[in-house]
Length: 111
Image 1 (cartoon, rainbow, N blue to C red):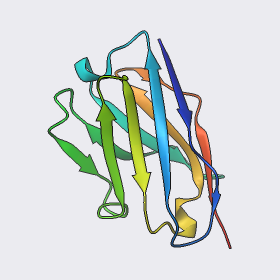
Image 2 (image 1 turned 180 degrees about the vertical axis):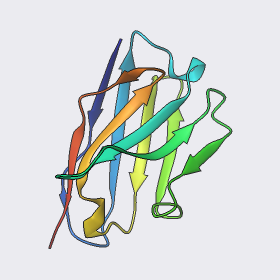
Image 3 (image 1 turned 90 degrees about the vertical axis):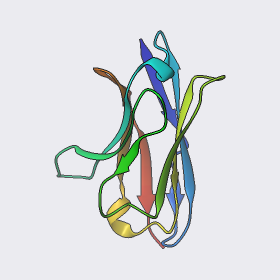
């Protein structure tokens, strides 16, 4: 199983990014999937999750309304759209499927 995140970058406050999570060895539509993040010096924190059907999505309170989780089942890719980012969103972002966690992609919010 491999989960490969990409799309992280340096972005100004108020900007947007789309993170991708390409899965191999696991079919995302059969698993619950989640996004996590870890800021420097802080613990890993949950950001959002989607059930296997894709119909139930939930978000951490401080990203709800700004972040959107989605999935392309044909390509077996998950996405996290980040809008109106703030400095506190700076972190390494990871996707997970079942018990598997990717290597992460860095998001840095700075002017």
